[in-house]
Amino acid sequence: MDYGLAALKLVCAQLRDAKETPSQNALTLSGILFQRAWLQGVLVSASDVFLLDDGTDVIHLSLSGDFRLHPWKTGMYVMVVGGYIVRSGEPPMIKVHKIVDLSPFPDREAMWYLEVIEAYKLFYGPN
Image: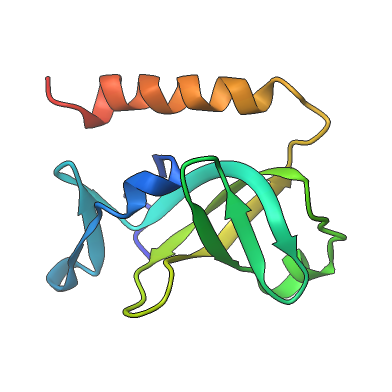
């Protein structure tokens, strides 16, 4: 994992447009090279299979180690940063590096969409 590449602030639906670049072990989206995605959404499944729904799409989360010890519950609003994994014939997945429960902060969901739009305008979109 190249931590010199920023984690892109995205909504799940945008990940469908990411293209693999095997020679660089990364992906591109709108011409930007990345390996990690930063997403926020509601856990719609938090038992054996973890699913995040941000209102645009649903993505699988791969949690390991200490992350599995936390009492994650369906309905929690969380922030996730992790490696984006394209899987042929299966839904895409995020290998979680960081997950934070933002449920105590009810404004975070509304603010998230504004943050994604701002990041797109400032960094990802055409100049």
